[in-house]
Image 1 (cartoon, rainbow, N blue to C red):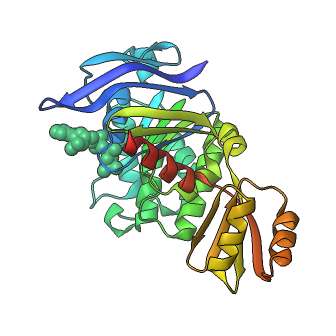
Image 2: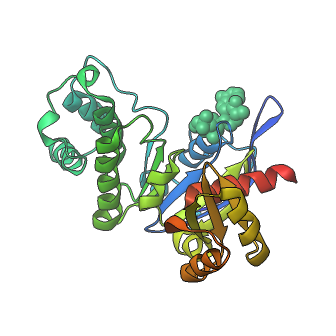
Length: 300
Ligand SMILES: Nc1ncnc2c1ncn2[C@@H]1O[C@H](COP(=O)(O)OP(=O)(O)OP(=O)(O)O)[C@@H](O)[C@H]1O
Ligand SMILES: [Mg+2]
């Protein structure tokens, strides 16, 4: 079963497609990283899923049902752009207003529950405007979690957070999927962070989904490469290029792609009179993969 299944979704503003015949599949239980440049259509797609915008065409199914089915809409929580909180009201008061909007029974228990999930049990009395950015983002998530949704849609929730803020957010999101069984769709530019938690990725460009893949697929596709340093970079690159297919140089380092046997590289360089001073084996991460994918598509 998929939490989100989108086919052929389109939305245009003033004759320009913001979302252009987009397909998307988010399995239940996934943390789905939604990646794309500024203006590529991430927020618009998320607003269409949540029913904040009406599509020009296409189909959105949530848990196998049309997204505007009232039974399924109540299972979706969202934080898009900002939490929409009143700055002068306390964290508790803001959450309380949302429980009224949603018509929740036992609001106090529900507020306690969501504050615990976002690790803010002790901050209920603080005014929203006095909260740090990290706290504000977590309050936004707490708001979205009210009513116990099965699907959480988060638009750039880690933007602007410091290392510690990002770590807490990571822990919260993993907790939400593992312990609450909630599926999470999260858009972000911070690929290194996303990579630590995402189980699936969708890459959008100019409103079109150009690639969807699981983290497992991504890992098995990821190229290995060796980074090394020698005194004579240019000479070593010349020698290596005669033996290995993909050798690249930059900022004093040499990178050799798709060669698993590091010892063979060192031995070959030694035989050719080059001493290796530093060497490291790496795997292409999400960031490099994304950049490469984008540059290929641009050339088309
Ligand atoms: N309400 C609107 N009216 C007119 N144009 C809009 C509106 N909302 C979005 N757009 C346009 O649609 C395109 C997609 O915007 P969207 O906000 O979905 O991108 P995004 O991927 O979320 O970008 P970012 O990373 O900057 O948040 C952009 O060209 C944007 O200018
Ligand atoms: Mg956006």
